[in-house]
Length: 168
Image (tube, rainbow, N blue to C red):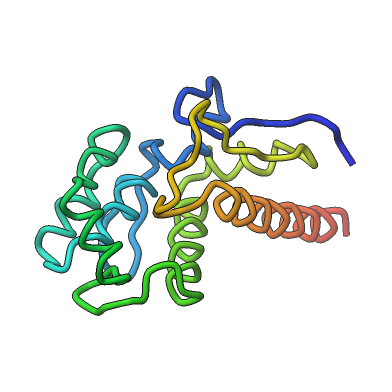
């Protein structure tokens, strides 16, 4: 097991920057075009499918800023987010499975991001922004890196099986 730690943050440089939830790594989930995982996560805070589409189309800090104080308070008060007009309990297993599907789709749709994630080998992935994580954060750092680690293993296993087929 590697002792190397790779910090998956928006300020990362090189190929690792593609792993950030802020990265412009377009994908489509359930027919909804998303410019980034951050756009997707912030879009979940909109009950209106039309507003959700506009927010999902954002990346970087523009996407982050779409998670307004008013939207964040509504999610915390109702303990609900929405996907394509359907309510989902905030931080439920269904919520995390939806986030995992979105992150998987990001890597399935972006070869460079997929290669960057697989290329982290067995390094420990962390998401440390230098600030304490807010208790109501939409996607806690620990869950985010667990999802990335799970997807990385899937990608590496797929590459390994593809390589075995090529060797035959």
